[in-house]
Amino acid sequence: MEKIKIIIVEDNAQMLGMLENFLTGESEFEVAGTARDGVAAIKLIETVKPAFVLLDIVMPELDGFGVLEWLSSSGLNPRVMVLSALSQETFIHRALNSGADYYMIKPFDFKTLKARILEVCSGREPARRSPAVETVMRDYRAGAPVAKFSRTRSLEEKITNIFITVGIPAHIKGYQFLREAIKMAIDNPEIINCITKKLYPGIAEKFETSASKVERAIRHAIEVAWNRGKIENINSLFGVRVYSGNEKPTNGEFIALVADKMLIEGA
Image (cartoon, rainbow, N blue to C red; front, side, top):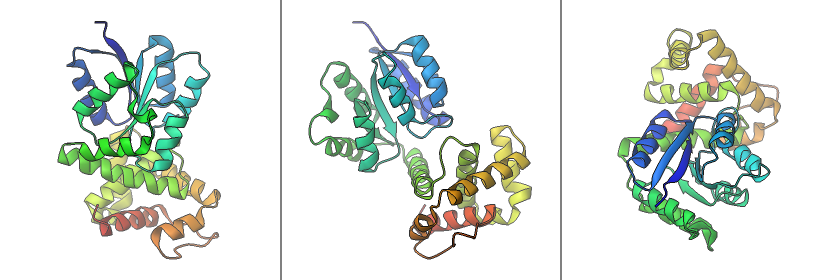
């Protein structure tokens, strides 16, 4: 039987490695390439012309919805399965209505992933049957992920949901820097008191940039949210009237506010 040619589009290096290792070890699949952002994914799809695409949603440069939109007018017709930590029904419906064949919520069981890929490729598309969301959620509840990975992805999902609510777009550099800053503040709350000496340099080292660029990018991300007029969403999110339209938090204040909220909720 001819192998199913798959490309993996995933911005998280750990998850990308796990997917590539698993699929490479399965006789039905050929991993023909990987990408970590939407722009690179489009170039890869045009070059490789895969039969199947595993697609993340929240990515730099261009998100998964942008890739789905491009696919709809590209003339190419790979099957697409979205793999995302976003679990709200709105995102599931949007992905399916944008052309995805199936949607799996992270973390998931890899055996179920394989079964769903084979079902989609054979024409048995579980999420196309009504009710689609219930099928997706049943797969999610049945999963048996590694505990540490589950906690990491759950944390990233919560941060992503907060960013969506307050209006911070995924394609700007400050998005990833800010996400990393919040995770660092959750793991070590004291680091917020050493923001210029430890937090910015720590992020800069990971992303191979400078501390000053990290600071400016985070500042820009926060300003984007405020300029989009999402103040009421922010106040609603935190349950109190934190800021008015004329006020903007410092980088440290915003990072501490989000980290504290997540620690209270058991992150």
